Length: 160
Image 1 (cartoon, rainbow, N blue to C red):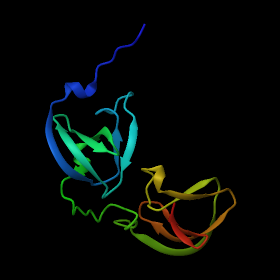
Image 2 (image 1 turned 180 degrees about the vertical axis):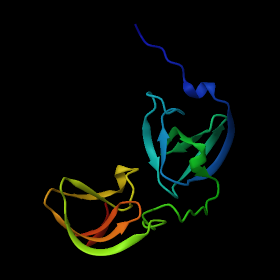
Image 3 (image 1 turned 45 degrees about the vertical axis):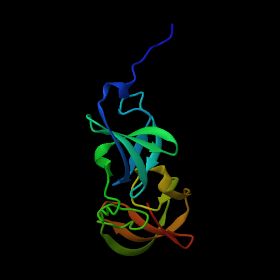
Image 4 (image 1 turned 90 degrees about the horizontal axis):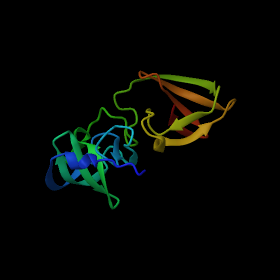
């Protein structure tokens, strides 16, 4: 027997728009405007990335066109202000925003495989640059107010 499911987007009243929006933070673009078990993240917008919004739902979701796909994002994560800057958000360009670091200079050893990232956040695997393995040594140059470390490994600064 074939299972029949309703289209969640069909139950939402969308105001039709055609505007460029900017991501105010890491924004998951989903196949349906929902966080339920059938919802899947198809694409991700990062702070400052743009997309075309084609509809604003009455339920807090926006319909967007991105990479040729119709997807859905939480409306509050998007803005039409294309010059939007939130200096409190860690980004690739400003990874230490709002996080204060206590300067240190100490060798540290990985206990387990540890991801090194461009930003001090685990919101997305796309910020992972490399990983260090058990026993690898890095130099910790800062301890962040958020509990993360700033480290130098192979001559580069990373977040952990």
